[in-house]
Length: 291
Image 1 (cartoon, rainbow, N blue to C red):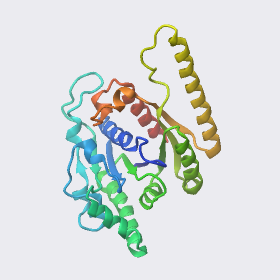
Image 2 (cartoon, one colour):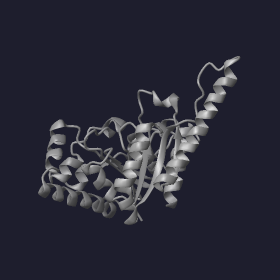
Image 3 (spheres, helix red, strand yellow):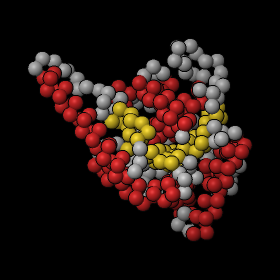
């Protein structure tokens, strides 16, 4: 049975695109069929992650200028460029990685934004979006559909959440994200939960991996104490947030500064399969399989 997972956030910059692309590719690398949908229609970025320029996009499908086969791109061969955990090069992936991109053309973004301001067009686009999921499930026999949504309370993000079985709310532990997460839980997630949708917090760039550099001499103990206090305070904040909004944390991904500032974020979990980040993606996969 297909699992449909939407990654959402209150604001941008919480790692939705990085996590969704690495999650989808890792699922396919493990022999599953993963379909990744870029529904961050106002700021699409997955074309850069996969270094792919599609001729047709989700926008074309929604406006009936393309059929499903024209917007679903089989990027499975991309997986063969990466070694597995044992260091051996895979000749062919047993799974499939299928991706549908949103258009990066400003004209297409304006067109889509204008259409959702008209009630008749809004309803028609919603029907097409629902049809997109149904066609993917029936035609491609997908194990997972991963949706990279627009942040905040916007038309396309709400629609994406409405067709998902499970929502992963990605956030960083800063004041704006914490306040925004409470708002989303109250305004959106409570209603969806009553309809049977499962929702979890996905903490990203949390403390717990890197120690400040140049720890030496008398500064070592003081800096270590400060670091420990930060981790302890973070745990308290998370526990309170879980209790306040009634959502569990599915995973906490530390701030991996050694890869965060890599100019090429292209499928990091596959490029460095022995890195702790890849292990976190694997852990997320195992948890998603059970819910």
